[in-house]
Length: 618
Image 1 (cartoon, rainbow, N blue to C red):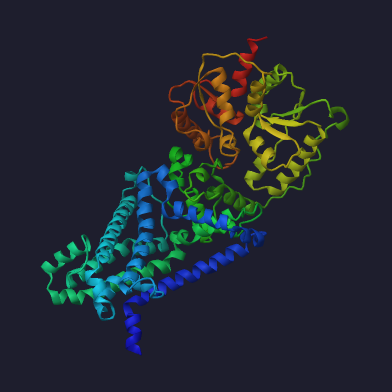
Image 2 (image 1 turned 30 degrees about the vertical axis):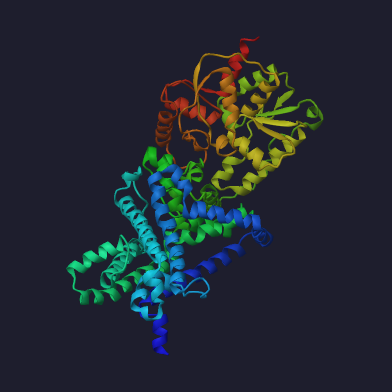
């Protein structure tokens, strides 16, 4: 009985089997825990198992967990490294299982034990008494599988070489530096780096001892056979398969304690998203936990962060934020609040983790000062006076009041369009509430927003137009207003398209900068370009545009970024956005103000250039 057990489970397979069992148990535990901690998770998770959602999730898992297409689009070399390891290993398992079936006699032979395809080359030799020799020795298919397994192993080894290079020579990948590792990361990474070299040596020694293998393992085995006596090669077979099994076991056990937990978490996160699950706006729930554990700490966010690039602040990015939250490391005020909250990390993250939301939740949790003010000091709108007197309600916002030329331009534009309008904040500046939210003061923000909402609805207007993208984002996505909300670029484009606004074309050379909140926050990128193409000569060839736009550095989301750092960020952004030194046109009062302070380049808001061209028609 004992001998039969050893034939099925040789001792050297124990590390692999123990590690794999632990890996599977952790995966099941985490999946159950995360799904039960999601708000209203029951029906959403069930919805996720509809056939079309399952198919969509599986396709995304292949695209992003195996092929890593988002990384490929940003960095080809980095993409190949991840794909060769993930997809190469996946194919190695698939072909290994098919080969094991062929060796056993076909697909009608029942289920194989998990370790059998992994250590197939060992069982083909040491356990050859139980295998059909006719299939092993003479099947053409066997030669094909030997070749494919060697080819896949070679591809994976090339990925390992790139991983070594990235860790010690990150500049080869266009990265200034790699992310800092914890002890668990180092142990698990070391095991991963050893898995495939160990497999190569184990299979090659076995090939040298028994005369098997293909172009890679067979050639290396022949080299071993030339320098090592046959009896010594046979003695080496078992120990090297032990080493291979141990590296696999250490890796599987180490995964839950390292950054490689994303291997388990990312597919779960993908299924959650396709099930319609959204992160909680009140706390770090199961969905946000899945996001945090799905962070592979690839370093893409560090290299795309403007704080890192322009000011050398390299310890506050999402890779470190998520790591510290996951391992229950207390977050410092510097790490929590020294962030522009521009969303560039979200846009470039290969896993599409909403790090802005996670950081904002942590800010909310750390906020201890509570303001009980109901904002009753705000003068109420006179409903009887304002109802039916204005179709459009214009809201300049705090930053527009600091750049009054934008507000004056918008008033001129609306008059030229024959619009019935009034200014909501004509006599007093009212905050939209977004800065309070960004700082973590959720309760205070909600009170202010409720007061603003009442004033907006009581105005009787049908459309709310704002010049500030920050205000536009929060009015459109968080106020739940019963009227249309537009940014002034959308409003101007609409008026020009209808013929109510006809500015003349100028020959001024302009470059357009997409504000973060307008492009990434609300997806408004085309309206400004349509306007500028109609009235000026637009140069729009720079790469840092649309959803990949650069922050001006003046963000209200950071309370720790110094003025000197903001200036560095603005100047760095200008170098990428407007190298020709054309007139820089933006659609945000904060961006205009920040860029104007950082450069001698002429900076205008899009409303100003439109208003100037209207003047010629008077």
